Length: 492
Image (tube, rainbow, N blue to C red; front, side, top):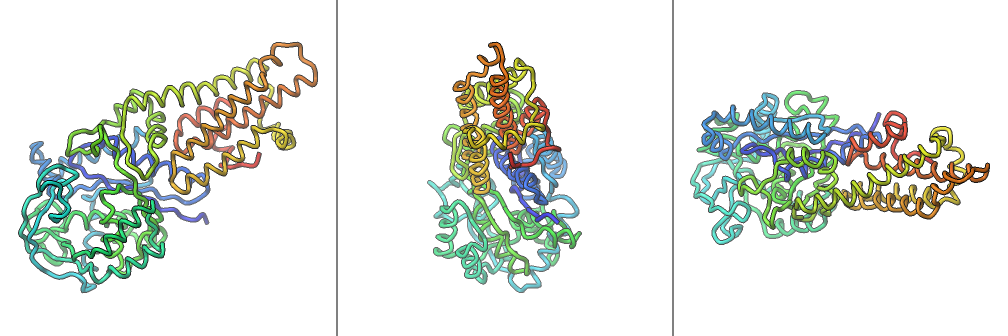
């Protein structure tokens, strides 16, 4: 039975439709899901929407709709956007679904039973934009640094989780990479937070009405962040399908943005330990996608519609650009100008030009190199063929880069192979062999040149498949190959 690989995006908040920042995260997870499926793993890829909380209720009121009507529309827009961007998720969880509500209440009951929650009074600051309690030391000029708004003062009687009882265990798990946190600077950031000390946190809200009631106190609503984190288990059967849950948990990879690191790396493992569940195996944290130097945020109003970009430049072009331009894990600035430059240089003049050249040369030569029947000859001659050697080197570097979640490096090695193919064409000048009177020797030489190019083009298409699925299938179709007859990293 194939080894499972359970991978998640964060669930996206539904106060506004999706933007290119949320597309960035989702496309990244999609690439990894497709890659591990090609390697033969039983992948389960989860995404979804976070639909409760004060911010959603306020947005619904502003739109003159009920909270449920409002989030229904936004959740639909997320689903439509992911379909348009060729996202291959296995499930889409909504936190207003009965399966989530049932599982969340089971989790909250287990927390109560653990003896690790208590009732107390919270007096302090709350950022509605972040949906989180915030301290004065986290503010910048009296405002939330992410939303540029002053938080409101809150005084409530809530239920609190005894986070302090689990900090030593969580620290040990992170320090020994039982919970891997990458990149390294994010692991160090979490360990620094632990060193500073963290207070117990509220798991409920007294004055918020739009959310899931605590099963043991109906006057209290579950704090949206606690309930949202539980989506990772309710979606795979916690509270509804124990067999499925046992097969898939723990998560192999949570991929998140750096603004929600504390919730995922500290609060989530501690909550899981409290109810006797294993923590996630790995958390990978990417940077902010900015626009004009500012974090791209629906609250700030500087978002860009991914459907607009996909319609104008193509789905695969957008998928390529987002993961090629910015080293994943670092902050990066989104620019239409850079997208257009990448499109022209890498896709039109790079990949597109190579495909056109190789297919045109093959057609003019009479289409005689048939890959399936020529593998043996290619295998025999590869020692003297630098291009074929380059393919094998590319495969190894690509695999290493993707498994370290270095998308830009994986794409970079593919484009080096594209350049190597262009250089191979210029060096061997197959057009001269096509145009001159052919001999047995020249025909065999031409066949070997074109065969090497077609084999390389096939490998480029296979390596591109997780990033640019439609483009990959088009190339494979043009050289009479498809995903049913080829596997990742075949022996040449």
